[in-house]
Image (cartoon, rainbow, N blue to C red; front, side, top):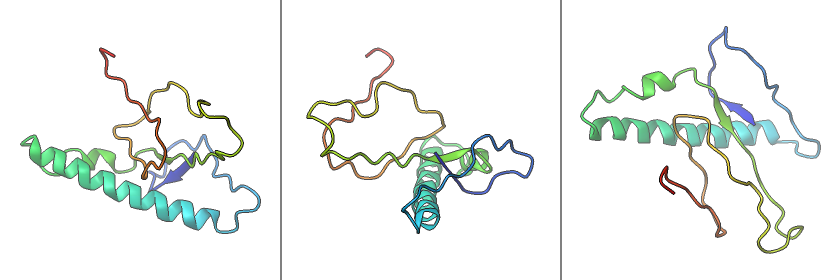
Length: 114
């Protein structure tokens, strides 16, 4: 996971930023992409607040200093057979989850009543 955005000075730092070998622009690309996604979630949170009839900053104020994480989960589809599960059943860990355009089928979401 790649940490995105400003964190409070006293926040625990349990996960170091790791730059994989062979990706010279890794940090710049992760920060750029992560901040774009973070700004999109802030816009969505503001719109949701307005739509719910509460102050526009109700959610975004609570997002400030949060543990915003970017999961660069690229997969080499040439190394896996059709039907391979690349990210099994899991829960997301935050207030909102956002991801880039999915170019392949297979993303499924389950409601509490399945």
